[in-house]
Length: 78
Image 1 (cartoon, helix red, strand yellow):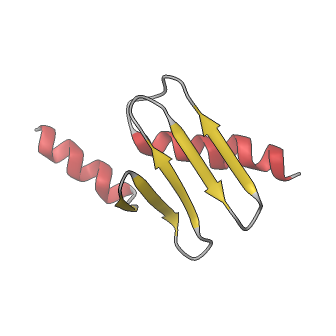
Image 2 (image 1 turned 90 degrees about the horizontal axis):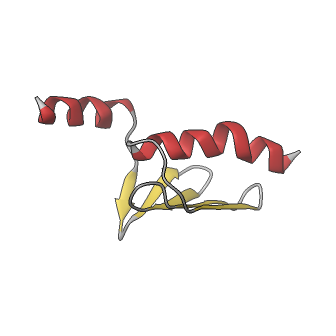
Image 3 (image 1 turned 180 degrees about the horizontal axis):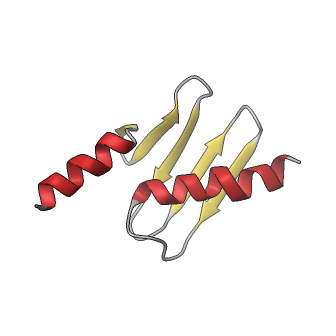
């Protein structure tokens, strides 16, 4: 059961990773360091944006990146 849930999560969103750094969008060179419980360093060199979050967040790592891209990055880039 747990494996099935894990596979479903990975199938929805897949990021390449290495050394706890994840490539979010290879074409735009967007990447993030994603740690335990909500720690994130999100880097978007195209828009000259770096966002650091250190707090508890939702249980899945992908929600944090979605939150940054949907709510924080547009606010900063305006």
